[in-house]
Image (cartoon, rainbow, N blue to C red; front, side):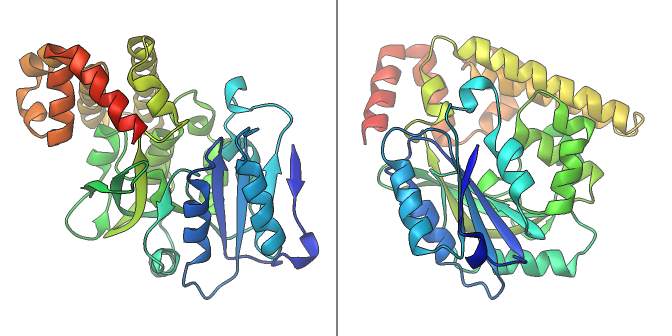
Length: 333
């Protein structure tokens, strides 16, 4: 690992560390970085970006920003791709380097849409000193055009995320909305949850929500998630023959996480954990697009799926060639 920075020009005590990971995102990374720089925020920040051996010019862009803003940027590079070795660059490299009191995350193919995002989340964290994290609503956008596809809200008002929703959902917010106390994130990494081999976003939801003090939700759209962005894991898997195998592995890891919750809470949430197990099973069948099983076992849940999700399920089940063609067309936009 190599850190490219001008230590003498960096803030000695940043309030917020913005953490970003990127790999071959030359078409997207400027949107992410510019959205960081456009924040209307009165306190000092630092921007740490891990490049995982990009080959498309992404690193050149990162170094350009570091030269232009040496007081803000710290660029982490490697000689070998870390993700392919099973290493999480966010947790293994960026979090230990972060010097801010708080950490805000955004992957390199996403971006923020509200200049007051950091200021609003910081205000919430100052107002509620016992909570671990603050999140907000986001929009899903088409990867190339940035056209809005949908808005994702946890609720229709500001609130804490409930224990029930934490246990029965694998994700209540987008990663690009997460604003967390650095101390809570470090404690998470050292806990049994941090070492468990499962989805990092799901683990953080559970730990911050149940163990570290809770998560506050702001019902304002302040970030954008690109759907099926180029070089993303989701895009590589959507038409892959390995999808069922990968989905099964994800399901088993989610179940292992819920079993840990049961043990960690001395069965206090056992009934919710049982509901969570069923919810994870539903998600598994949705991920592999098994519409027949979904209709037979969870007809009411299926009705609550978004229009696009239901169209995806129906086309995959009843007209797979058309489904494959449409996915291909979407990815070329």
